[in-house]
Structure formats: C-alpha cells, structure tokens
Image 1 (cartoon, rainbow, N blue to C red):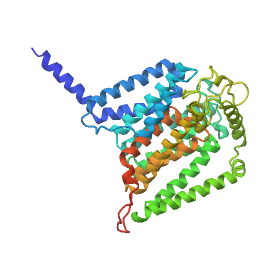
Image 2: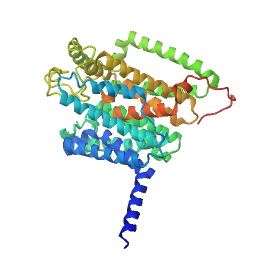
Image 3: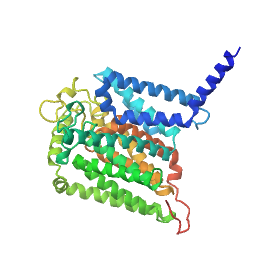
Image 4: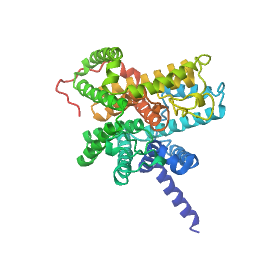
Length: 436
C-alpha cells in the first residue's frame, strides 16, 4: 500500500539531489581534480581506472544537465571553440592513425564538456573557489611528497617521477611528472589564491599560506618559462589594476595604448632574446626544444595545410611520433610548444583556428576584467596569460588540466561579455568610482 508513495519520495529526493547546487559543486571539484591529478591517477589505477572515473563523471554531469534544463539558460559554447573541435574531428578522415585520432578527439571533447558543465552551472567566484580548493591539495601534496622523498628518506620515487632534489632547492615536479606542469598549476593556483584573498572567500591565513605554497612551487621548479611567466603575470595584474581605476570613457583608449606597449615589448624581447635566454639560464632547455622542433618542421611538407591528424597526447609507439626524439633515443611526449603541436597535428588551418580561438577568448577576458567592478573577473584574463605563455614551451593547454581551464575561461568570458557590448564605449561615470 505504501510502496508507491515511498518510491515517489525516493524519486523526488533523487531529483532534488541532481538539481542541488551542492551536487554540481561536487562534480565540478571532481572534474578539476581528475584533470589536475591525471598523471598520478594513471600511474596508480592505469588507463582503465582513469577513463572509468572520467566516463562516470561525464555520465553524472549529463544527468544533472537534463535534470536542471529548465534552470539553465540554454547556453551554447563559443563558436570558435566548436570550430576547433570540429576541425580536430574532421582530421579523422586523413589521419594515418585513425584509432588514435578517434581516442584523441574523444579525450578533447570529454574535457571540453566537463569545462562547459562547470562554466554553465557555477558562477565565476564559485569557479575560482573550485580551482583554489583543488590546487591547494595538489600543490600541498606535491610539496609533501618532495619533502618526504628528498629530506626524510633521501631517495627518489621513480614511480611518480619524484627526483628527491628539494634539498638542493630543485628542480622539483611533485606529483605532476614534470617541473613545468607543476609550475603551470602553481601559477594558476597563485592567481586563484590571490583572487580568493581579495574577495575574502577564504580565511586570511588560508589564503596567505596557499600563496606561499604556490610561490615555493614556482621557485623550486627552477623553470625559466615558469619564472618568466610569473613576472609577466605580475605585470599584467598591475596593468589591470591601473585600467580599472581609469575613467570608463577613457578605458578603451587606454587599452589601445597598452596594446601598443605590449607589441613594443614583444619586439624588444625578440631583439634581445639571446640576452633573455642567458638571464633566465634557459640555454639548455632551449637547445633541447630546438632539436625537437627542427625534426617536427622537417615532417611538415606534404601535410602543411591539414596536418597529420589529431592525437592530443602523443603516442610514441606509432609513426611519425616514434621518430620524434628531443635527445637520445627516447620519443618525446609532446612538441613542447602548443602552437607548433597544433600546426603538426592540424596544419595551418588548425593553427589559424586555434590562435583565433585563443585570441578571442583572451580579448574578451581582458576587456571583461577592465570593465567589471569585482576583482573576480580578472581571474580568467590572468589565467589565460599563464596558459598562453606556458604554451610557448609546453603543450599542456591541449590536454586535461590546461584544456579544461582554457575551456572554462573561454565559456565564462563568452557568457559574461558579448562582442556588441565589448566594443561599445562605456558611459561616463563619476571619477571617484572605486572598484574592489
């Protein structure tokens, strides 16, 4: 007699759980954690365990989107993002390793969907909190395992790529396989922690300790690209701080001045590149990459327009990747440059689409950061600065954490600022207007 009402109550409770913002927050945090910790997860559970967790997460996200379809605004991803995903998918036609390309497209699309889910169900401050919570754990675990390996037992842990060099002040990689990947997460973490502090989203002690941990990770990587990016991000943050205090009607003119100054700086950096390489002690890392890049460029003729076919992660056991070694005989894991990587996999067309997608996302994010009162809108712009610069020496933006973070920034900026409003000159406001 009471079975039917009980089933209804259970169904209503389950539906309420799916519609709960807290459940969406749990899924978002889990998605970021899987992306950030993909390397240790694969090492500990194998590809089967990692993919099972990812597929299960996506299934739950789909159910939540269906359950909350009336609450959401029918948001669609930016067209530039869809075009890039579409061109990567089309490369399946001419790829000489079609099963690998199919897997790479699936991997790319899955993380794009996870990023779209997070951006659609969480507002910007909640997104910042999600990244902050995950990166606090990841960076803390990285420092802890480095201290354990390098000081307490003074023995490397090859299984996780820990070199036990923290006593020598680095370089360290924590639980993230490479120092540049640790540095990337530490830079994004530093931006997130600073934003949390400014918005008072966490206790001051938590925020300060998180920033100190991120700074330690950045310094101990001893990576020239990470240290150089940290300097640029600090300058970009200061510039944004200044823009937000300019009268609204003058901000557009100021943006053009800043753009001109940025072009001048880039030209000067190119002219004095040798001195910069020497200053950052990056000659060894640069030679390592140049050796690989020359081999990649040699394989471009014949596939320049359309590329070899998308893979995302490189597969060193199949041609032509088996022949691409940075040094010695060990095949490289990526092109160590996201732009060259896209050119190699998707050709000139793919590179144009990729650069256009990055440019549109960054422009929107930067304009948004300069216009909105809340400091949280600076987060996507500064995070994109990190991703774009690190992409000069790594391909992290094409897979997992880097790709997920980019998609979230791209979708968030697109949602918050249309091009019509982006290009409109803001109305005049009282000079004593202040921004937080």
